[in-house]
Image 1 (cartoon, rainbow, N blue to C red):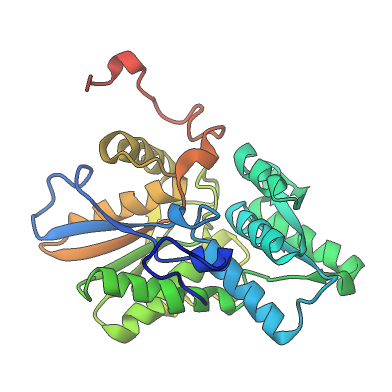
Image 2 (cartoon, one colour):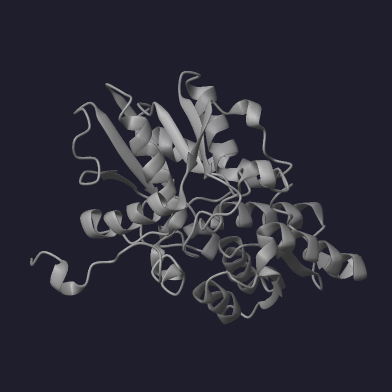
Length: 321
């Protein structure tokens, strides 16, 4: 995968994918021991606005290399939104039509962004979540298999490979090899598998910890409760050191805190990762914890994250600047 240099010019859109900043969280971490730090990888700085730009690019590149993706093919996949945005964006850049199967309860913003890139949105049953989108996508392909190229993010090894080649090395470089714990939410599991694999190879003592919803009925859009879901083929639980279940309400409350205290607007999965990191940090005397903020929160302003989940202060309740 091509990674852009530290400059302001890029020869193609793909050169802008990756090299996202690492931000130290200082306010929500108050009260932790001074030798325990939490760093957030801000994947919203990718051109498509999320961590999914990395695997989407790598999967399309592999499809082109193998010949499975060629002129006339339509790119299709199931997605809760961010991979769809990445595929729609890159498909437009590369000249391929894109169709995406999305649960109908995915945020309005993400569906609109996908359509703005010229891609077709096919809605699946909201009650079946991402698993329902997977099943419907398979049915569509079965009707006309020669028409489609399916990146198949849940089973394509190019997904974790993208993070092995870019996300992991970036974290290692940005922390100067001092990272002690790596936490990421699990949806497809590509981020935790690929970046975790790289970091473990550099230092086997690094703890690789997955963050997942506390139960099957949750409001953490984009994350999978593995025990009740179709398990991605790229997911290998034996490579993890631990898993931390995150409750929806606490994850939402953390989103509000991150926005008000750190000045970073994030989504539900970022709130879950930060909540889990703080839970872990309180058990440590020292450590350099890196978490992934998969995207920014502007794609969720129409969702229950901001409508009906938790109390959001009115302007009069906020401290004056």
